[in-house]
Length: 596
Ligand SMILES: CCCCCCCCCC/C=C\CCCCCCCC(=O)SCCNC(=O)CCNC(=O)[C@H](O)C(C)(C)COP(=O)(O)OP(=O)(O)OC[C@H]1O[C@@H](n2cnc3c(N)ncnc32)[C@H](O)[C@@H]1OP(=O)(O)O
Ligand SMILES: Cc1cc2nc3c(=O)[nH]c(=O)nc-3n(C[C@H](O)[C@H](O)[C@H](O)COP(=O)(O)OP(=O)(O)OC[C@H]3O[C@@H](n4cnc5c(N)ncnc54)[C@H](O)[C@@H]3O)c2cc1C
Image (cartoon, rainbow, N blue to C red; front, side, top):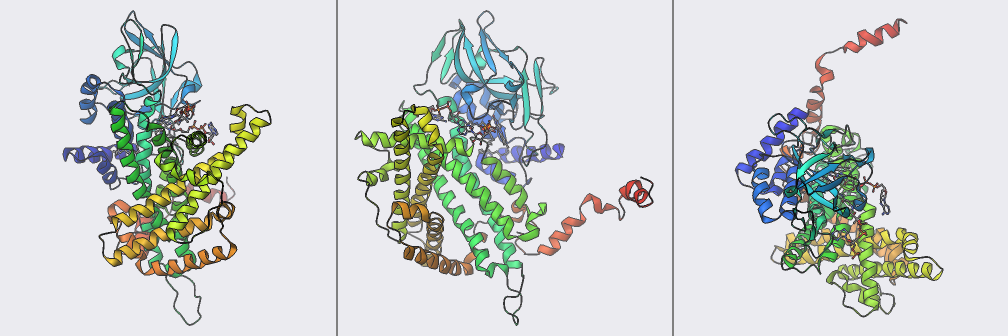
């Protein structure tokens, strides 16, 4: 299994690299090589980006060619057995020895072992290690170091290195996630990645970056990329589910009629059409977020980090919500395919296991939403002080006078309704924090007592951002389209708004003048829209344009030969090589004969 994956992974990265294509293409083509994860994902997904983001030009000149030519294979080892979220609590230490101009890496105890890094178990021979930097007896917090862990000729672990694979997981079982421990392992001073902080030969610590969290830059980059990844993942899952639903016929609602396509059931449309719409919403939002990200990078190149907090808040909530929505909706696609959706050959289990992992890695869902909430509460307080709001929070102004927003069921009106919900929920959090403080709590305890509401407020803010971006970008991008295309894409973005308005009626009743009659109207419009989308459903997923080799699904192949493919795959199962398993003779027969 591992050998096959490494072979396929190398064919993928070397073949495509020869064509000089970019890593997102790598990512997309890698799907044609295997259903699961490449052990080289972290090399291109984090090791290379960290060299670019955390190294000086001189260090990049040394390490980048080696990495891009695969002369070294790397990963990103930050998480430890005892800490993943709380980076400031990481235990691995890097202590500077001025007498030898080296850092001494140590794993003080079991919980300090690096744990999880992709490719670390058996593939990588280098890695980025986040360790607490000590020099002249002072700890300067977690910093990135580039560390060789295996001999590049023999691939044997170097003396002082303990490394291995962490074992089977829910998914990602080809990612070669590993563990890593250091026993007084020495690396040259120059292996500290020195773009944001330096240690001079005599051990003096020099802070370069104006912002204390630039060390976390790779994580922001990956979170931004993951939003796009989720759109792609969900688009594959709904392509499989919609095509299967067009082939599958089941039940007999009318005695004298043939069994209908299950795609004709309104409940099936309710399960699946939001998936089509969400894939579009996340793709458009990810492109908008990427443009925001590159804009902040440009500002930072000019020494301006003012826009970084908003980017951190946006990338945090969009990564959290996109991965959570995608996990839930891929599982919904699996539900929609009945028993055959549970077959590994459908590829829905693999897509689900990838998405659900993404809800955790690169920042746990709850933790990242609380990061966004921190920014929202600070923005509210700045608004109270009369300071200007950042663009994505302009809607807070409307809530300043506390008046209830009048409900308007047009698409633009629903977007404004979500703004009102977000503003109202943020305001409620601020009120809760202040109430607890007035009752004698300190700020930290008042914050903790409000965290359930804060997670909800951050989700509401994120939903409002997605709704607005999806609506605006659809209008902008379809301006020059044919009326037919424009109408269908408008239907999808309207469906997204109606779906979430019905999901959030409680909030809309609380923060707008929405009435019960309005809810009845929303439900009727939503159901009518499902029927309108039905004729275009297969065309809409075909438009995602996935080749069968990429979908790798017995249920989702373009020719619809579902039952033939299911049987073909079944016959390939090793258990079917012989008509009688030797376990019969070893165990079952003796048991039947009372000899066990
Ligand atoms: C061959 C295959 C094809 C290859 C194709 C390649 C294509 C690449 C695509 C990429 C996709 C996938 C590849 C990668 C796969 C990933 C695998 C998984 C990798 C990992 O999981 S790596 C480990 C990730 N770990 C985390 O995310 C940890 C999460 N924890 C944190 O981020 C932080 O610790 C924290 C939760 C933010 C809390 O930190 P802390 O308590 O220290 O901070 P405070 O809350 O007190 O905030 C202090 C202050 O700092 C601000 N801040 C915090 N974080 C950031 C940040 N990242 N950027 C900017 N600012 C930040 C925070 O806002 C506070 O500011 P304030 O004081 O409010 O002003
Ligand atoms: C498939 C996979 C691949 C990975 N690859 C890598 C990799 O390549 N490199 C790497 O370094 N790491 C990797 N990781 C590790 C990953 O980054 C961490 O698991 C993730 O950051 C979550 O941290 P944790 O595991 O410590 O969870 P914890 O933070 O311990 O979460 C446990 C629970 O505590 C809650 N919690 C934690 N802090 C707070 C808080 N402040 N407030 C409220 N609730 C809180 C969480 O919400 C969660 O419910 C990978 C993980 C997975 C699953």
